[in-house]
Image 1: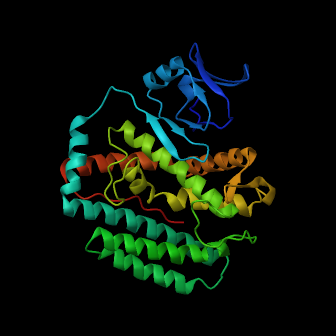
Image 2: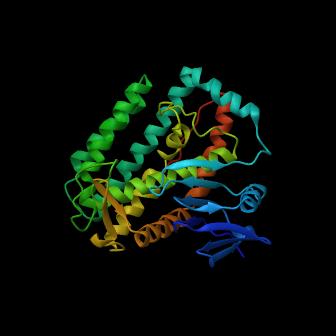
Image 3: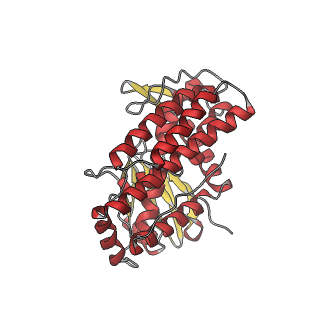
Length: 323
C-alpha cells in the first residue's frame, strides 16, 4: 500500500491516539477513523483537536510532519524530531541574513517565481477564454523586468505589491460566476473566493513550515519577508513559488466546477468562513492539485536546493511553473 497524501483532522473535539501501529481518531468515545502509521505522509490538526502523548511519540519517531493550526488554518506550531538536526545549516541560515547579496538574490527569486506564475495563469486564461487581459499581461511583464533589476528588498516588495494588485483585478474574470470578489481581502475574508484563497495559503504555509523544519531549517528566518515574532518568514518566502500552481488553480477549479455554493460560507466576525463540509471538500481538491502536479515533491527539491545555497553561499533558483 502507498502513502496517503495527508491526514487532515478538522472535527472539533476529536482526539488522536495510537493503538499498535495505527493512529486512531475518536470523537465522543467512538472511533471515527484509523490509519496505519506507515501510510501517513503528514498530519494537520485544526482547532480543538486533542493528541495523546503516545500518538505524539509515534509521529515523532516515524518523522511524520505534524502541524497544529487554529480553526482558520493559521499555524500554531510544528512537531519536530530531535534527531538528524544539521546545526551547521541552521548557523549558516542565520548568517545569511547579514549577507546582503545572498539575501537580495534569494528574495528576488521568490518574487520572480510568484510573478511568473501569476502571468502564466492569466495568459492561459486569456488563451482559453479571451477577455481583454492584454494590458494586465503587459504590465506584469514590465513588473517582472522591474523585479529582475531591483536593487533592494524594499523595492522588490513594492514590485510584488503592484503585481498583486494587477493580478487580482483580473481574478474575477477567471471565475465563471460572479462571486462578488472585490480584490484581495485577507483579515477577514469578505467573499467566498477570498475565503478559499486565505485558507489555501494558510495550508500551503503549514506544508512549507513542516517540510522546512524537517530539513533542519528554521521556518521563521527568511530573506524576503520581514522577521517578526511568530511569523514563519522562510515558509512565506518558499510558498511564493507555489501560491499560483497550488492554491489559485485549486480555488478557480473549485468554484468553476460548482464544488461549493453560497450556502457553504457563513458570516463570522465581520467576514466569511467555510462550513466544515466545504473545508473538507476544498482540502480534498488541494491534495489532488498537489498530488497530480507532484508539487510537494517539487517543494522538497526546492528546500534541498535552498539548503545547498545557504551552506555554500551560492545562488538559489526558484521553481519554474507554467500553466
